[in-house]
Amino acid sequence: MSGRLKLRRGVVVEEEPLTVEVGGEKRPAWADTALLGEMREGDEVIVNVAAFDLGLGSGGFDVVHVNLSRGLEGGGGSEHVMKLNYSSLQHPVEPVEPASGFPSVPVLVLPLHGHLAPAAWAAAQATPGLRVGYVQTSGGALPGSLSRDVAELRERGLLAGHITAAPSYGGEQEALSVPGAIAGAAGTLGWGAVLVGPGPGIIGSNTELGHGGMAALDNAHAALSLRCPTTISPRLSSADPRERHVNVSHHTYTVLELLLAPVEVAVPEGEPDIAAALEAAPGRHRVFPAQADLDGYEASGLPTKTMGRSLREDPLFFAAPLAAGATLRHKG
Image (cartoon, rainbow, N blue to C red; front, side, top):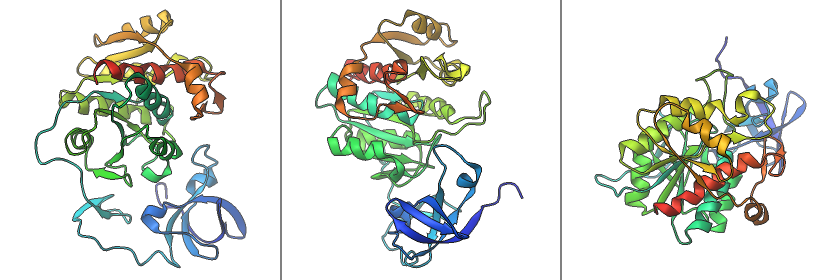
């Protein structure tokens, strides 16, 4: 039956990288240890094998559903609000939303997770000391612990924190909605600016509206509803083999077309054709150029790969979030 979970029994045969033997075959796997606990060699587990069996790219591994050997002792705590509610993975959290009131902060809406590191780095260069945090939303991977970029940015002090907003979960703080996450970031946590966007592994169905990039529409509306200065980091590319993503991606153009109020859109300096294409989008959005320090970002040691292409192979992809992150200095 279509839509049913594809679960299989397996045994952990290697801890790093996590490998599970299923039906005599050794297969790559991932476990959300924050939710399920640690995985040790010899543990009996139940894994969801759907993604690996389909040969998916970024999601091409089995996902541990439960550890039968040592994963049944969880629980405790006094929280009474559920994340992933009414699913078999429901668990209690302490929401970060303030009871009332919050200051207005600049919000940068990211189209996909690959924009997070360049945007955070550029914001730190533009305004040293500005406390910029990340709100993870739907559109990509939901577990907050899956992102290596978040871990590295937090370690370097380039992110002030990490909130996972429903249905995303497992961040340092939890929120039940994107507006609640932004309000909590500004009020409860005192961030000076917010980067909001999906986790890694954006989803898509090769249709105009059926893709994870549509999360940017909801995220921008959430920021606008709170009267926050709202900027969109456009998805751009100079080397994507798919025509729909070359120059201005249809993901970004569609979001700009559907937005109910104008936003700001940053474009890298020296790209008049890109700026003209964005200005032609419906909605009277404010398009303005900003500097994108590609050399500085490349030297930082932060991620410089997207869909197998390097920064030098697809500079426009990285220039977009670098320019967008730099604009936070004008509002922070």
